[in-house]
Amino acid sequence: MPGFRRREAKDLDSAAQVLELAQQTADQAIADAQREAEKILNRARQEAQQIIADARTRGQTDTTTRP
Image (cartoon, rainbow, N blue to C red; front, top):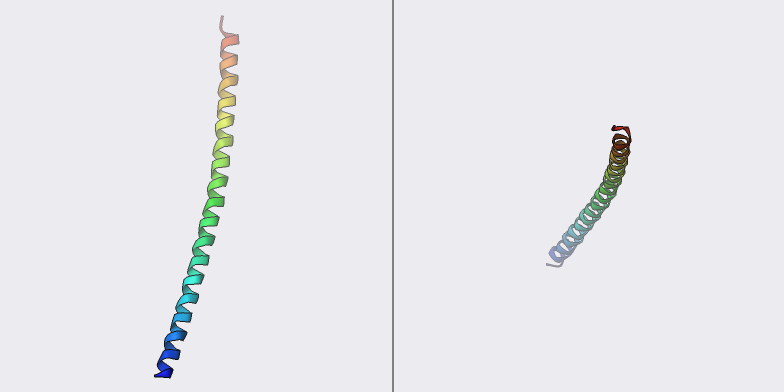
């Protein structure tokens, strides 16, 4: 049965390699998603700041132009 055990060990090594690759792929996907989420959040924050600044400008204009 030494050949069987060698085959079993080889299968376990192969399975471990597949699992390691899957983990690396998952880690990379998570890192990519986090980077993309950060970009989206930054854009949203910038847009929100611009909207607030525009609203303040309009508010100041409205109060100065009223009779």
